Length: 397
Image 1 (cartoon, rainbow, N blue to C red):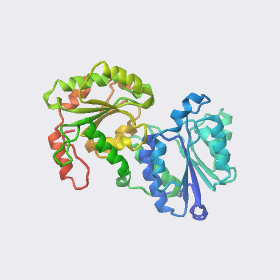
Image 2: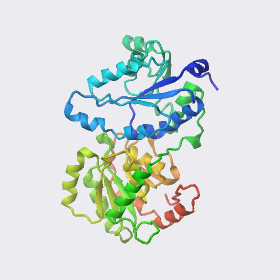
Image 3: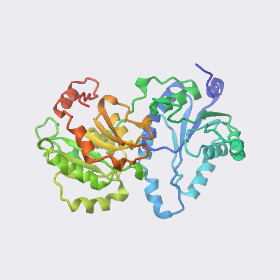
Image 4: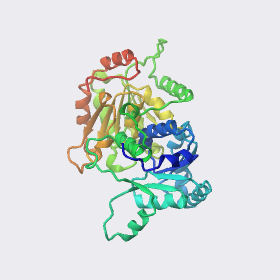
């Protein structure tokens, strides 16, 4: 094993560390394992986390939405992260958070930011002028003197990854590799699988919601009456999203097949799109189709997912959470980031666009139907109940 970037003696005498990252839910789904491994390896070091909001804006009208970012609910329940800086969505709060972090006098700051890496190098050093600062570093052209000077402020760096430099590696392997480089921690493949501990309160919520939708039977077994399918067409970026109209087409196509006629559908909608979605779906009056949005708490989402038979999702956190709650998933993806495919190959089918520059909306309803036609839900249910580990195996994928 190579010598870690952060010396063991520095780790031994440090009582806290700050990680800086522009975290999305998908990032944390895999980084969570790394933070857990760090906490076990160095129980004397308190983990603080700076969540940088890249949508930071001076427009007050957007602050209400940004400050309710669902990741914060998940982080609040994370037992090995002591402090989270989550007030970075406005310029004023950003400056305030920097001042607060500077008061901590962090002995170690690690930037995991992979976008505009030089700016996060500046931020990390600004937070800790005297500490040991590590950041991500991308190759810099010889004439780009400002960036060369910025990166000199780092005490050590993690080389940027690309699809070519990390061919055939999953994002979980890349993240685990960072923590090996940084701290000498080995995270075996079995410990990179995503997980989510859903509080009992939100499991009760999901069960009650299923009952209200008529998706739960009353025979006392807790088994569902008919299949329940979760459909997610939303991503933060348009190139990874599916039109809501396509979701309606998929439901209509499935309803024309007897096997799916009694299926209940849960359509995920981001809060800011709920009003438009309600109007659109009202025009079609589809039976046993319900719009869903985790408006109150992040854990509403994985709780609902965990009760479903199948999840169909575009390239976003939902497809990774599907693996975390052990529900089969069909993932609709572009070609550009294969390292972000769902990790559980036994329970996942990836439908990829045909051309490298295609957006996800190039995937048709027929493409999805072709995959669904091969699925054997009765077998999947038997596998669910017989798997002692609680993990389904859908061999027909």
